[in-house]
Image (cartoon, rainbow, N blue to C red; front, side, top):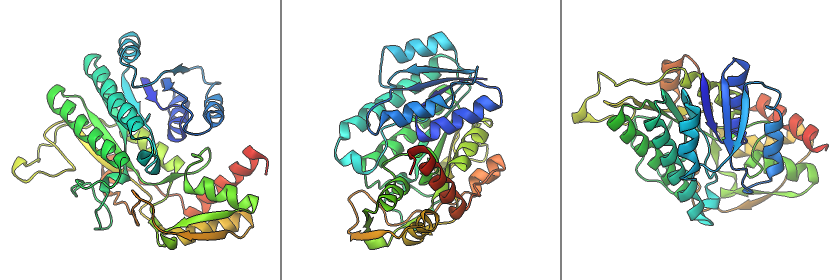
Length: 335
């Protein structure tokens, strides 16, 4: 397959690219290398892919309305994995326009490219954030997700709606993947594991929000990458059992699906911190803070739909995953 992978220099994108290349696919990786966090980390991720003959990198912004159509017309991709986005719940309170440009305009450019150039399957990144104000656990794709609590979450919900429209109107097979708190080597510096590990090793205090009363379905990066690839290999078709009179958000009359990818093992934040302490051999100095705007106190994924669809479910334990991250962090930063 010839695959367009947007966000190729990103945390998830670089891992997905590696899996695709190792199995023999041709990957055109696209990224704008923006400075939301240190671009050096992004370039170093790309360097790990440079040795693969099937990989080619294009520095481009998905919001570019001139270059994106030209790319699709020139390359004639078989499939698209769209992971490029302006990430971060908290940053969406600071720079909301960046989320409109990347997550809405950019996604529209991807949909149009897929529509006009015969792409066989579009897999795109959604987020557990779409569950917003929901409190019924575990979160299921069969639940409504109509109460986002951040602009970031709203853009991801909008992506699902936009994808469904194109699946309905143009029979474009689309699959949205709701990622649950991804962590692991080469992770994002604005995420908790990265921030906590850096501070603990430097002997600095860590900020613990909601006074530590947070629970997250932390999901290891290798599990996420495998889930993306296995989902890519099974394009959705219209659900013949779909009942328009009792609409189920998890299925459709169109070739459209959404799936959770989570570890299905929610971990209290204080246990997460304790695991970092074990693997660093240091004690964290904790500063307890109120919950931040846009945050939710708990996430917990029901992954039964993903497992039934692909035969795969994430399995890496939090202790193993944090151990691998700390080892990578020490090696990468020499600490």
